[in-house]
Length: 198
Image (cartoon, rainbow, N blue to C red; front, top):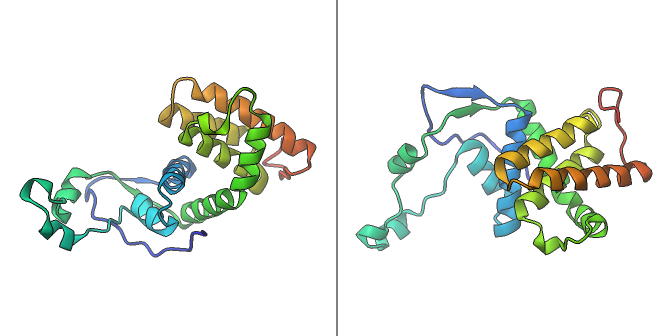
């Protein structure tokens, strides 16, 4: 399923705090969307709007049918509970996120089969979904984003794993991405511009 360009439908967030979006935040949000997609098979457009723009779908009818202690939160309660710093996304951030996500979805089978081939003593099902997704994102950047240096891609994957995964994940992900990089270079799949040199 391909992510389509979306209209910004911003969920009400903090009116006093905001930060500028950047590629690291884009990667974090893309990771969240892809993991949610892989485990729930929810449409990527719904996940994208929810995670990038904090757009929630509320089931008002279901809320009325539930007992008092099982009610879904109201929109105002959700706003309060999820009050967060608004991220001011630039068009290029959204374009990068959309492109990264679509390439990850398109490359999924290729990269999963490559992980199976090169991961020693690890069955694919034993790799945590977050780690698997970080590897897919890193491998995708290597072959589909010629302007991003290889070293930057691998470093960003390691940083994502430090923030979102286990203590041993950074070394594991680094090792696998290095093997994937070597494989891609041998097959001529990495075409980096001068800025994205090997």
